[in-house]
Length: 138
Image (cartoon, rainbow, N blue to C red; front, top):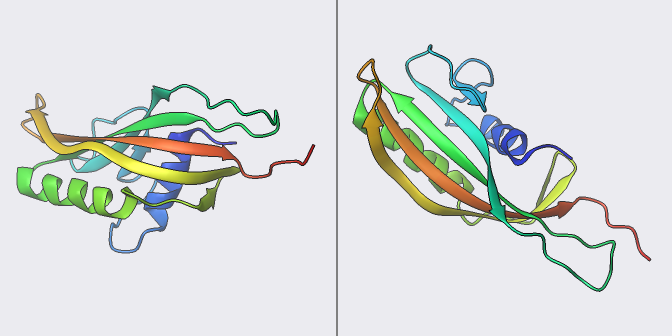
């Protein structure tokens, strides 16, 4: 099972029109100094695990934080909004050994600040509900 950030990276990289390419303008957990225009996904703590009477069923509720950095605020906002449009309210998909029942945008896009190089930083937060892709019967 991948980290949620890895799975979200894969989902976004597969989306036509976003033009996000891993290790070029799409990154996980560490935002590079270049390129100026990029997207970085971070794993975050979410809600607790759901408990069921069947020990083979376990849903987790992680979260991801997505930062969009861009030289132009409006271009960054458009990228962030496109990401929100592609991820918000999707579910019932398998990715990286997990079955995602829901991905939900909780906040964003919001323009938080400009960095030391005067690049706009926009942020989004997503809640996730997922379980292992294969559930064995007991």
